[in-house]
Amino acid sequence: MSEPCDLCGGARFAPYVPRMYALAGAAYDLVRCWSCSLVQVRPLPDAAAVRSMYGDDYFEKDYDSCLSEASYFDSFPRLMKRYGALLDAIEALSPRGELFEVGCAGGYFLDLARRRGWRVRGLEITAAGTHHARDVLGLDVAQGSFPPPDASAAPADVVYMGHVLEHLRSPAAGIEATAKLVRPGGLLVVEVPTYVDSPYFRALRRLLPALRALGRDGGGLLRVLKFPAPGETMEPFHLYEFRRRTLTRLLERFGYRVLRTESRVPKPDRLAHASAPLERALALGFDALDAAALRLRLPGGNIAAFARRPAVDRPAP
Ligand SMILES: [Zn+2]
Image 1 (cartoon, rainbow, N blue to C red):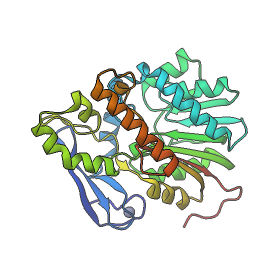
Image 2 (image 1 turned 180 degrees about the horizontal axis):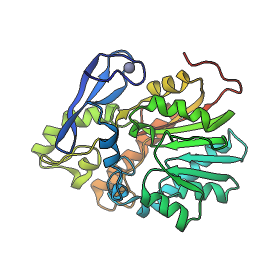
Image 3 (image 1 turned 90 degrees about the vertical axis):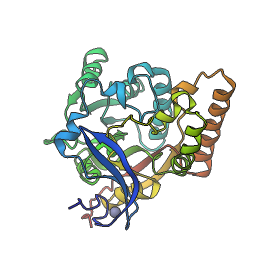
């Protein structure tokens, strides 16, 4: 018996990528819901299996949707640029007040927000991230999973949840739980990767046998793009693969009004300072795709949704 779709409750799925992931000797498929088209992992790993993936080496393995081969703590300049732009977008929609981050990793985003005048708090699942946020940056961060068993903290003006939803066994339960964290009339900002359910991933997947036959794996770039070498496996960190439509539908299901969405194509770290001609061409290609995603609303590698919690709650359908 397979679990029903987390977004719409549907029970029929079409194959998307068979045996995409492996964990503790078990294989996991990616499937697509027939009714709402949300891509999800089946069978769904149980809660203990999910917890087992977030040990102290997590930030060396998958902190940023595999975009970086370096660790989270080494990607500081690129992250700060991204976080600055995100705060600009948030501040265009909300006056500075209290900001809560779900899944704050080492706390760099909260630290930047604090320096810009926000009062900040956070929640983080990993011990390494919590330690860095608390002891190195001096932030008010609790260690725990999300949704938290006890969400008694005062609601914030803005809640940011970046690259968290796709890790949850139930994103719907996660968005439902944000009602306790966002004040009525406040802002929820959710960012998720969209690359695996995108034309880019599907095109590369079709080209893969030819690329492999030519002996071209882009010097490890294919692994970063979620095509591990034969014999290598990936763990199912991302249990769901969203796109603009499914993310919007999930937020609206719990009463949020989506004010805007923004899709981006982040450039892999290793192309940021590329000097070889092929890598420079690839870097320019990523920049062009990013501009198209942002200005023309084409699919990207990530999407951020800025959603308003209504001032008065209506019952969820
Ligand atoms: Zn569905």
